[in-house]
Amino acid sequence: MGQKVLWLFVVWSCFFLFKGQSVKAGCPIVMTPSRVVVKYGDPLTVNCSSTIDQVESLGWESNVKGTPATNAHHVLLNIEKVDEWELESECFFNFKNGSQCIEQLPIIIYKPPDSVSIVADKPMEELKEYTLQCIVSNVGPLYKMTVIWYKGDTKIEQQKLAYTAGPPPYNQTQSSFIKLTLDKHDHGRKIVCEAKFDFEEIGFNIPPVRSAPLDLQVLYRPIFEETKVEMIEVPPNGEIILNCTAQGNPMPNYFWQVPQASEQAVGHQPVLRLQGASTGTYNCTASNSQGFSTKQFILTDAPRDYTVLAAVVGVPAALGVLLLLSGPFIVTKEGTFSLGKGSQVI
Ligand SMILES: *[C@@H]1O[C@H](CO)[C@@H](O)[C@H](O)[C@H]1NC(C)=O
Ligand SMILES: *[C@@H]1O[C@H](CO)[C@@H](O)[C@H](O)[C@H]1NC(C)=O
Ligand SMILES: *[C@@H]1O[C@H](CO)[C@@H](O)[C@H](O)[C@H]1NC(C)=O
Ligand SMILES: *[C@@H]1O[C@H](CO)[C@@H](O)[C@H](O)[C@H]1NC(C)=O
Ligand SMILES: *[C@@H]1O[C@H](CO)[C@@H](O)[C@H](O)[C@H]1NC(C)=O
Image (cartoon, rainbow, N blue to C red; front, side, top):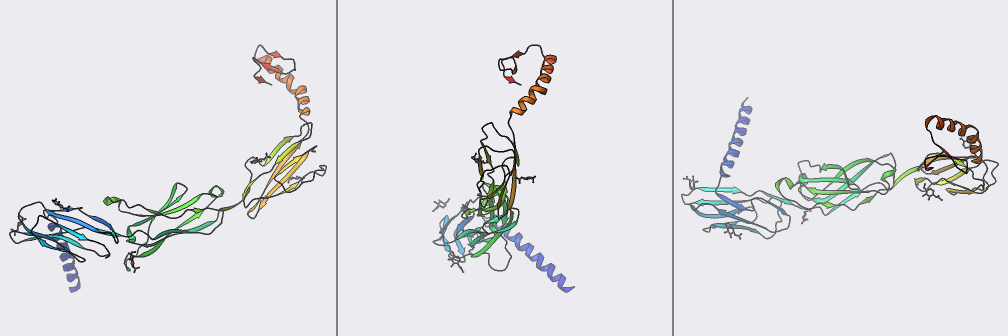
């Protein structure tokens, strides 16, 4: 019971302490700049001046280097090199009536990372999950640092650096982790991580530090750009080219299966040039360490067959339709039918 009362007292005291400080904040003081974000090791200069005449003297108090009270109307805090993380400074006034007024200068000291770098497996296999690490080294304060990940120009992740109270948030090395599953389109893309201080909301823009790009190398099984079954008519001279080129990483190897009748010597090239090709199904398998894909070329004989068939069945049918649907049609010398200027050859 007694302990509870004690706690209540402590809480109330704190409350009044804060209230007290906020009253002091009403000092007729102008600090230029009114708050500072300063890089560790840089100089710091802040001008404190009074806005009223009833001031006897004014000065700076600081745990690093203060400025004694002077009778001037303004006083400078001048630190040649900020090399103390816990820097505190306040400007104070002594009024002519003997009372004093103190205002604290809001200070944030930061240190950009010595380096930002990505650690990842290389190469990666498609459709597997990988963890990438972005190491931000020797930075402070940790809790003001965000890591942004980009794939190409696209932002893919944004994380605040983890910070657990305990060790000082300065001079620390911390990492951001992301999980990625890549596909073949990611092959050759770049991943970058960027360490950035979150000071924009208080009006400070510190340039972010970027890692060197990680060139993604994605292993993927061979795939064909076009359809996997190609119908080909062998022209009268029997010369045809079968193109089995597939995309894949590593570069695919090719294996052809041709009809027995074909006397062509087939190698392991992606493109097969045939002379006097015989009809049938030609199979090509593109394979690499990640798998394989098969493409079929179905070779059929002479387009002549179709012309004959078309002449026997197609033309009279088309004629009939044309006669029914439209009035004029022209019979050309070659024996094909065309409408109007012959733009639609049947
Ligand atoms: C400091 O502020 C006072 C009052 O605004 C001004 O007169 C003075 O020139 C300033 N000094 C410096 C060094 O900026
Ligand atoms: C002293 O003078 C300052 C400035 O005029 C005023 O704000 C403050 O209330 C005065 N304090 C006392 C105790 O009179
Ligand atoms: C912290 O970082 C500062 C600035 O780089 C350096 O001067 C100082 O020696 C570091 N301290 C430790 C303990 O690493
Ligand atoms: C085979 O196809 C690939 C892509 O599908 C193309 O880049 C290549 O030029 C073609 N080769 C020939 C000989 O047509
Ligand atoms: C190509 O593959 C098809 C379907 O798997 C098969 O029927 C055909 O016999 C194969 N052709 C050759 C030349 O092996």
